[in-house]
Length: 196
Image (cartoon, rainbow, N blue to C red; front, side, top):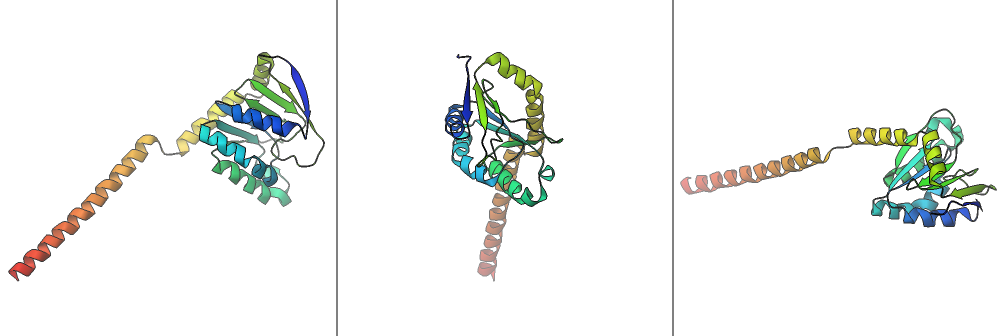
């Protein structure tokens, strides 16, 4: 593994970052205080591929109410894009300002750029493939605890596989009962016509 740090600007960052995202095997974590519909649409194709591969996308951002009122609808629209792509969205209160991305807990991107909202501003990002430093950032931001907590909450709010199976069985039993009742009623009609 190479332990070099490389600097990218706002133009060179995105092609390299998307290329590395698409090579991810387990998870992509993006810590971006601000998000925009422009960047959500920009990332949609790559993030759809991640979702199909089963790579978990985890986004840390500010709650909607910590954005200026005039952009809250845009923020909600961007969040909807990410939610539809299966992303886990973790809201961090208190005006977070850190900008970080971590791919498979090995490749670390840090710098000045709001990855999920940048449009025309001049920025720089550094790419580091130093496991010890990446682990320090993960520890500093308490990412493992926050991700575990969010996944546990997501499991509590989504139906389990068992309850889904039970639901399907109950629906099948209901359909069978309806067919059975209709058949019995049909037999009674035939008997009443014969006897009638």
